[in-house]
Image: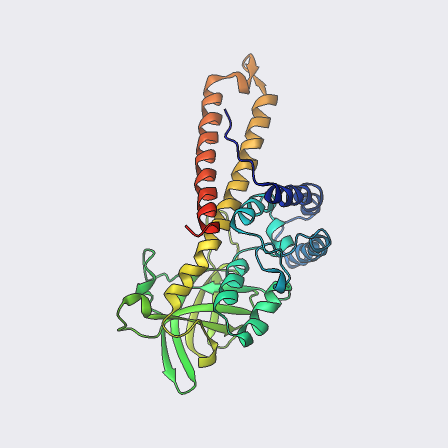
Length: 325
């Protein structure tokens, strides 16, 4: 028996609009582009396609779902953002078409909550208008685990500037970004240790910022870069959220970002499960349809239960965030 994932009427309305946009506009446009070719002409074609889809998203009232109206967005709450994220991820271009792709989405939240008025105008507005890309540089190869208090990238004050040296990797979106939010250690002896790091806005390209390579995974390279930072000078006014608040800023940023990430993955899993069921109900082998074979039924049912459990967990988290619990 399926679990009822019915959303409130307002959330269901926007979810259905996004589903229609992805199915009837984004997916056909995406299918017409050879995304696997990988040469410069292919990348140019992808960019042109996404720009056209962005105009269509604006026309349909689906632009910037995660940002408030005063920044050109829809002002959706966490539950609606979760629903929209799952639908957008049913295509590769979907999040980009609506300007809610990572890591820009998380950086928009961060700048909205921590940026000065000047920082918002210079960095947040171009992101919201789709005129810029950005990255978030925190992860380091020499520091294993998920404890950001161990970050080694060091920033030393020099007059009105900070001089930063360090090493980052798996920095999503670094290639082509107009700026980075960089986490570096500014107070090595701070107590508690969570106050050791600060966040800096770094304009790119920059002579102190070396984009070494795109770190490839089992699925190839997808702009998750290794970065060498050597005597990078950043103005003190480019600290984001105040000195020593890098850890707090990261925690606030990763909350809604993780919600969107998880629902995007769930959207992809739902689509894969639909493909699995479609195949099982159409493929005849060894005397019956695949869907009539007990072993196949087990696999489909187990996948469904795992999906339902994950979806319930994420939507429950969205509910708690939305109601301040």
